[in-house]
Structure formats: structure tokens, C-alpha cells
Length: 251
Picture 1 (cartoon, one colour):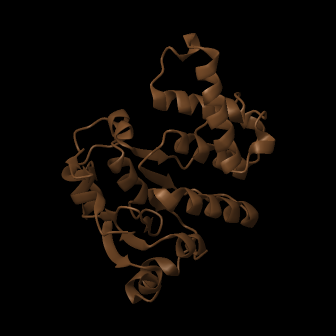
Picture 2: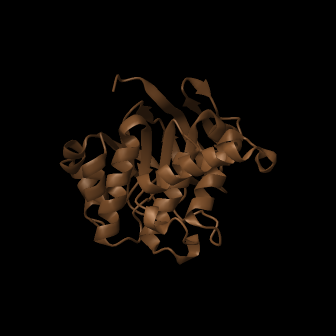
Picture 3: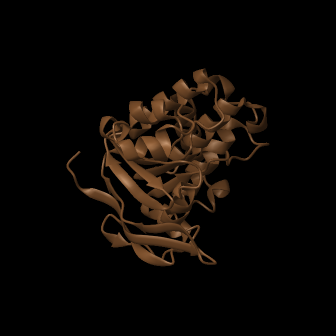
């Protein structure tokens, strides 16, 4: 960690018919860190994520990725720059196998519209890489299962594998442990820690034990504004944060 910002926002604001969902958010995510965005329900976390990945356009403000103003860009253009989002609701092809899902993501990264016409050697390279990724997320024994057959926690691991297959420089995770039991939470947290070893991660997460385990820095949102920032110890000892967030659904 060298303190260099990879993602920044300046006065990021989103209004819906007079309701201000995100208000004047200036966020700074440093390269090589795992950064959490937390806050009570309705704080504006998901809206902020939607703005960062351009599924929503801001009412005002700017978004900078690696120093470049990406505010005008479309979601696909942002993904090509290396800023990739994993959705809260698992986004995989349900009737394809685990291996096929990961292989499709690898082909998409390559931009190979004509890979079906390529040599078997090229296709085998996809298989080898896909198998490695499947193994990396603990799904080797499930490689031939269709996604719809997977238990919930394993499906989230598959989603993470397909996201990693796009080789993002920065990964945005929207509540990666939502709806999981303790065993799955521990597995996914370990997986995120492994993925974050050579990437930058920004995550929305309700489970504060996961945040404490993984995150270098935490930004607390409430009513669409930044309430506080710092490491877990600083945040957890902040009286305003405790009032606004810690006492609400403390995991």
C-alpha cells in the first residue's frame, strides 16, 4: 500500500424526484487496499455502488478511476478498464455447469467472439485456466454441477470466480456474504482475502466481523452522506457511528 488512490469520487450526488439518496460523497480508495462501505439500511450504499459502476448516472459530481474521469462512460467501458462489480444477487447462468460459467467469463475477457472457430489448443487453454479458477474458489468437486444445483454459498463462490476470470484491477463486491450461514461466511471471507492479495477491493457488507477481518479502511454512510472513515477500531469507537449503525443489526 503506497497511498495512491485508484478510485475517487468528488461531490457524488444522486437525487430521485427530489429525494437525495447520495449527497456530496467524496470517497478515496487506495490501491491495494480492501475498503468497506457500511451503514444502516437506506444509507445509500447500493446507490453509491450503482453510481460507481454507471448503472446509475449521478445528478452531479465526478468519478475518477486511475486518475481518469469515468463519469461519462457506460458500464461495459468501465469493466474493460478493470473496474468490475459482483452483484448482491448471484449472477451466473443457472443451467450451465460451474466450469462452463467460468469459461464463458474467460472468453469474454479475451473478447473472443470467434473462439468457437479457434483451434482445440486455444479452447483447451480456457479449460485449464477455468479449472484452476474453479479450484481456487473451492469448487473443483462441483465443476460439472449446473449452477442451479449449487448450495447458496457455493453459488456465490462461483459468481466470484466468474468475476475474477475477467481479471479486474479493482473489484466491487455488493454484500458478498448476505444470506449465508457461518461456514459459508468463513469460506467466502477467506476467498475474498485471497483475491484481495493482488487487487483492490471495495465492498458493501453488513457483517461487521467480516469487515473487521478483511478491511483496511471503512467508510460509514448514513442518509446518503459520509458520517465517518477510518480503520475498524476507529470506527467502532466512534459514538456517532455506534448510534447510527453499530446498534442496528450488529452481526
